[in-house]
Structure formats: structure tokens, C-alpha cells
Amino acid sequence: MKPSTRPVARIVTPEPVIEGAGVHLRRSVGTRGLDHLDPFLLLDHFESVRPADYEAGFPYHPHRGIETVTLVRKGQIRHGDSLGHRGTIGAGDIQWMTSGSGIMHEEMPQVRPEGIGGLQLWLNLPAREKMTRPKYRDLSLDHVPTTTTDGGAQVRVIAGTASDGRLVGPVEGLAVAPTFIDVVLPAGTTFREAVPRGHTAFAYVDEGAVLFGGDARVVRAPALVVFGDGDLVEASAAEGGGRFLLAAARPLHEPIARYGPFVMNTRAEIEQTLEDLRAGRFIREEPSDNI
Image 1 (tube, one colour):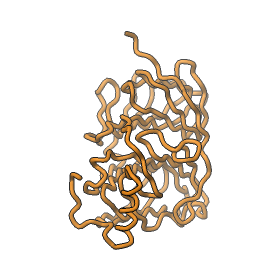
Image 2: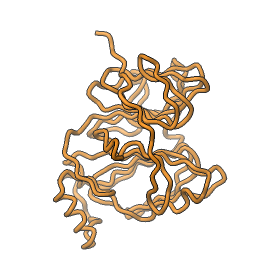
Image 3: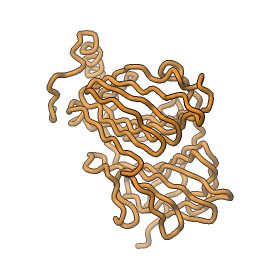
């Protein structure tokens, strides 16, 4: 049976929002118009050269029940957390944080001449993993190398595999089997990648313009492209080229109860999380690796 190309099911224009202590963002997943794309809960695009748009940052705040993935396109972000991690991530770096049972952290963009730019996604954890031990995967630029495909696309595989398994990302072994591929399409190039049927798949175009699907539908940045089901994601560069993040994962099909930075399965679990926070029990001394 011939593999089918995933059609473009929906194109979403990101909405401007202000989060943290006053950071200006564009949000495409996690809005009234698009609450989530199971198991993806949120997608924010931050980009500005105006310090007033981002320098207030995201002071210490809690998370439970999710993973956050931050990709820095330009500039630097200083971070710290309740596990004792401290550091700075810069252009091309990626931070994959599993909040599990609970973590407090801060993300503070640094004022630099080039400003700041990047993406942050929230990925839901299955019920059995929501109260596991928090952990980090810090991926520097040189740990996620760029490879040029036969079609001329420049790709960085962050999670999952690409090119018929020849390229393997450093993030593996997760319940939702995510695929994250950062794709740059110079003018005249193409991209073609298999995505398992039944997996949720989208592309976020943050630079230039890209043509997607069998009908070569043009999408100009900034925009989220939600794909229908099929076997392949196909893209080609529009005039001038473009850049996008391809994300796919196995849906959880579990109930979602969310309250700000907390995502659990029931309202009772949210209430328990808030009680833990009030009572000083949010950060667990020895969180379990199993519920």
C-alpha cells in the first residue's frame, strides 16, 4: 500500500499573550481556540529585540505533571531550580525538563543586542508518570548536530528518529514516543519524513514560508500547521526558504485537569497539588519513580 501524505487539517495564527512577570509571547496551543493537541498542552513562541518585552522573565514558579521543552533560537536564558540546577542556555541549545511530582524553577531571558527568540512546548505526562522524580535533559548545540538530507533540508533530530532510522535524537524512552525535528529549508529544498499513523502531528513555522502537504499549501511564519492522519509529512521551501519545528507524539487519551502550571487527571489531584503548595509539601524529599 502506497504511503499517504498527511494533509493540512488546520492553520492557526498564534495569539499574543503576556506571561510570567510581563513577557510578550505568541501562543498557538493552549488557547480558547485550541486548548490542546493530545499530548501537547501548550506552544509558545517568544521573539523580540525590545528588552521591555522579555527582561522581566519568569521568576520562580512551580510545575507538576508535565514536561517542558525549550528551544532557544537566539539570545540567552538564565535558569535555576529547586533541584540545584543553575546555568544558561543559548542559541541552538535545548532544555527538556520533566517536572514530575513537582519542581520550582525560573527562566530569565538575558538582555543582549540580538534580543531573544525561541519556542517552548508543554508535553503531558501519562497518569502513571505524573508523580515521578523530576529531571532534566540539557542538550547543547553540539549535542544535536545538523544533518543535510537528500532533499537538501537541514535537520536537527531532538527526539525520535528520522531518515528511515538513520538519524536518532538524544531524547528517547518516553511514554508518548515523541518526534521533534528542527527543519531549515533553504530555497529549492524539500523535506519528507515518516510519522506513525495515529500520532498527533504539527509543524510550527517560525521563519519564512513553507509549502506543506500533497497540495503544497503555503504557510507563512508565524503559524501552526495541524496535520490530519497519514504516513508522511511532506514540505518544500517557498521562495526565500523557511524554518519549522515538526512535532509528533502518541496521544494519551486521558482526562486532563489543568490549573496554570499544574496538569493532572482529576480536579481532586489539582486540589491536592494546591494544598501541597500551601502546606509546603510541594517539593518532595524523595519522589517516587512510580505512583
